[in-house]
Image 1 (cartoon, helix red, strand yellow):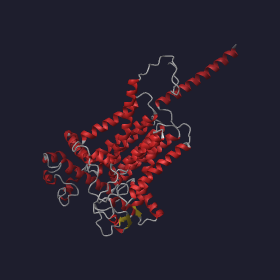
Image 2: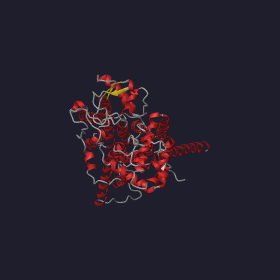
Image 3: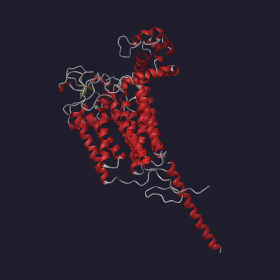
Image 4: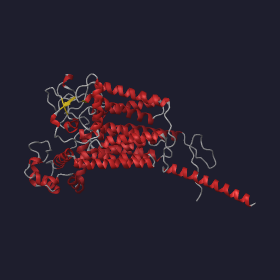
Length: 537
């Protein structure tokens, strides 16, 4: 009897242990504590062929849009040397004016770059790849920006393919989504930056990779690892592109944690990205080019957006801790030479007051001005196109300053809105997109594509707001500085509309065919995932 009793006790103990392990796995799967790696399975041939087809078609279409009948870019506004002098290169202008009117693609080695402070940017990664491709393709110059355009188009096409394959299950839906995303990426508002001497190009294509990565983070195994990789690479391209995009690390990292169900790997990657963003922001303080740019931004914000001459100028200067005699500089900016404030005899004494901290204190004590300044910035954002920088090289035969507009669906839609809407359009739009994503995530067991699309929408909407704040309040809110916010909004909009359409369709279906409540003891429909219940405590 003792032996039977011991054996029965052992079996009972093993059964209890298995039940405990099973309940622990189920509990951690529900709460997201269990590492979501799973078995590393390779994609099927059909999935690979589908990705290659969308990537190839998107890339070919982007290259045709870039090169036919002549290459397009955005003319240098004078900032190009901060980036390209890191490669020791200056543009070959052929005797034409170097700025504003024409784009130049050939950059030659130049001793003039010695001593010029170089701005740290993730765009340098794309430029290094372009320099290598310049040699491979036999293009002229140390680095040719046609090669930069090819590299950027390839990254964007890969992002389109990954995002389209992540959110669709049929070939028809996949092609439709890829076409919509292509129209956003190829829109003239954004496209000219891809082969231009600016850091915005890295941020814009990085947003596409981030959206694609977030859409895979809800998977297991290889899909999860792909999502982490795309999110990390895209995030680095975005918030290491330039200082005004560092704030985007917050919504990107928060979404990585949430989309990965608070897994250890997701938290680790998000933490590393935040640390990298912090080091980049700290390194900006040590960079001469970045310090000069920060001072320029502060002057632009204070005298271009706060002390404008349309209100009590002397009271504003007093609140900012600046001399009343500087009222003469109201409405100017850093480039208003020789009438800019940096030529004032008192500039050296008050230079320390021209900072983000001074601006933040003013805004916190003048809340009404937050809306007024934001409204002006939003109006600039809704203009979409940078209209004073030419798109063509002199060899294209177009007049100086000509803008290309071969693809402009997004631009046409936005610029058709009534003038002056500003925040009265952007804030409700952001709210609807974020609200749609949150309502989708609150549903019980939403379809996988809906959850993935909702996470991508939520991330992009957060990026839209985060990219809006720095140029709107701490720099000069030019249309060019709003490109990151506009790109994130344009990418989020079709995803949010797809989710909203699915919710409306569900509502119509439930109204026409209401579901019967499932009673206790009734079988669950086939295909419904069921988690084992935890034992009662």
